Length: 389
Image (cartoon, rainbow, N blue to C red; front, side):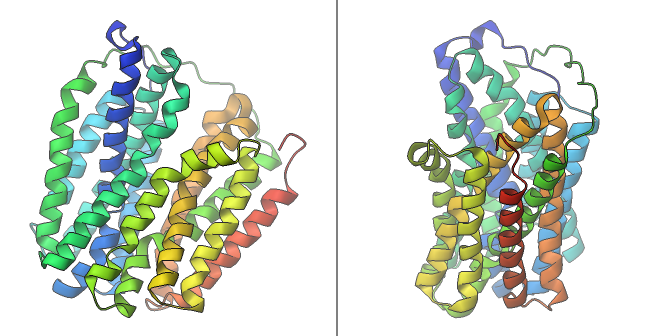
């Protein structure tokens, strides 16, 4: 990703507010709609489109493969940050609206792949665009507000799906609403982003030196995190639908998940200021493991809400802590290690739905396996910690 020159118009304190709101909105669309809108919509598509849980797993996998492909493209052929955001958002809006225009399963697979790839472009673009602006005006601590957009988007998509279920809109109309919102945000941000389209030449690449054993173990553990969280993140609303008849009740699972994600990073920084990133990561994974296994032990509305809080309240904290740990372990090779973390995470997400398919759509054994993987990787993180970890 090309480095960004901050224009004079964006060298004032007001620029920090613009960067926060634009970045938050972009990530809300990219992650809340482009990546995760399918999760709360899965029960509706099961109901009115006859989608099976196995087919849902394939649609989820297509999105995750697209996300991996988008991340690899951003590494191998870095686009300009603003262009990545603009065209990524436009692609998300188009592919989301496209979900309402066809009932062909393989076209759905293609559209979810496109949305996943575009989401990666927006995520990388927002990181490369907003962070330099915040740092330039000495508001780097506000980066957490930008990334709260992920939870905001998830919560919003969940609320729209909840309303759709109660009002009997159907999945087709819900895709139209979400695609329309994505289009409005894209239009609203396009010119604002274009005003910052001046870019400096790409920064020189650091000399490639071998990464340490600790770094590769951490990357493996980050991939385990991707596998561990994606099963509840994808199928929790569908599980709620199986045990709770009323959409007015089971539909709250995903908004609770998103709300927990939106506030989690701020709460973690506020209440655990003495914890290192690795400590936050380890503790977060233990809480995540509890959230993953809870619906296996008992299934009722209280357990599902508890699971949503555990999973939603930790996945952004672990993401934040993992990226910080990658920068620390990687040193001059920090960007290279972050890329390795991203690839491992994406692969973990791809494996998760495929494991569900291997068990013919059942969630009990995949969830137990995910909890065991999270526990094992947490132990590995503790045992492999170097002297500064």
